[in-house]
Image (cartoon, rainbow, N blue to C red):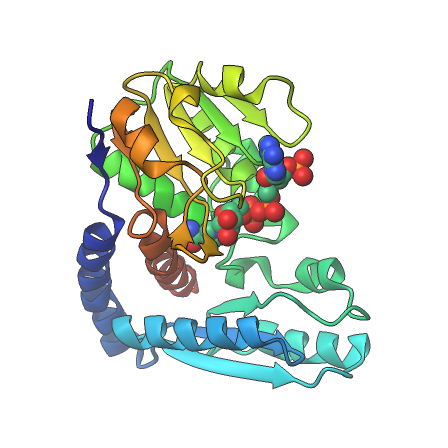
Length: 283
Ligand code: NDP
């Protein structure tokens, strides 16, 4: 078998083009563009790169972008004050706090103080809880939302399927499990202490990988015809790799999101969709 590859790059482009029109009409009607504020604390290089990528993504759809950079030695109180100002600024519709933050900053405490209506990254406990209870409106983290959208666009039938999620992070594994549960999959969440992971993976009709270990999932861990959603992104000497051995898994699976070009390109576009929705929810 040779798996159908789900082309995230092409889907992301289509969605971006649709969003451009929606952002333009919002801006024309309201006189202000939906705007993302990104709070970056400290000098981490990776977060600087991510901030630049977010700015480009915002420009690509016609969203506003505001980067707020705080020095490494800022106090928690001053960081809280900056966040409070963004929370109450009517010209800001979405807020993201980039990771990592310096060690002396209490990151979870900052997340708790984020205005849930501007939490376009879906990290505030209110949004996580509403997703758990399936009680909209809530914001779903963009990465699992993008993976799900690829499956929906491919016409995948979810009801009754056994979904196995490898990885239980708050930002990928758990929300993906909940999204599939709400679509009536039977869901198993696995992690580093799971016994016989290959055996559990082989029972999956839909296998979602959110581990961060290059090519860990082998071809014989996958049920013939299964749908494999690979969120993994690990930079190796041989380039960017997902969590599965793509060549071997593609021989067995029915559908596969490739790395690169699968779930990755969808993430920032889904974030823009969340930003537009946050702006639209403002009365
Ligand atoms: P985390 O490190 O937060 O979580 C990794 C999960 O994998 C943990 O639950 C961990 O288990 C589990 N795990 C680690 N090793 C094993 C193992 N040997 N066997 C079984 N489970 C294991 O990562 P994230 O969820 O943030 O990210 C996961 C991957 O997704 C990364 O590659 C990341 O780069 C990528 N990612 C991609 C995005 C995109 O845009 N496509 C966006 C965000 C992330 P335990 O809980 O027991 O420690």
